[in-house]
Length: 174
Image (cartoon, rainbow, N blue to C red; front, side, top):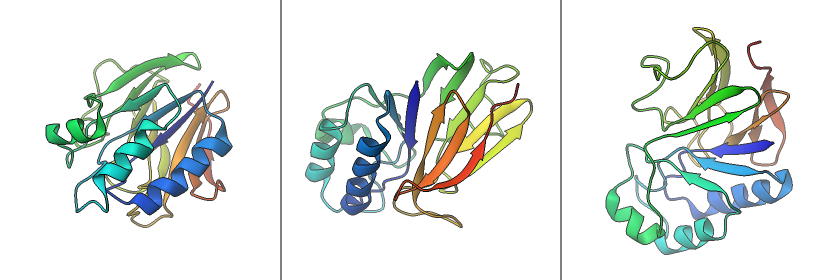
């Protein structure tokens, strides 16, 4: 199982096109977008909707603090508040990060589980309160890091840039 996670596109068609190439190169089983598809002005909402429609499935779209219900009509898909999966012998909790993060940990998570969120635009992997945490970098507007995405697989958690180069790796808490 291999899951690609990205976040904070903020309407950038160019950044999303770069990410699509990464999606194809990574050959993932699932894709999770942790919110903020639009916001801060979108280049072309219709083009972004077309790119999302062409994403391999299953594709999970989580609502960010800059996303609106009107966007769902453009995208042709409904946002989720969060996604919860069980892989790699642990629970994985995906959110945008403006509600659930290390300051407000989802009550479902237990020792060794994984909390994944974007929102801060920084690509970080760390352990916190007996959880493995992935703070996904922004695809289009990174802060203090390269634009990129995260990969979760049996080995652990990766942060990669938009050329597919591994920037960071951390194993899960055992």
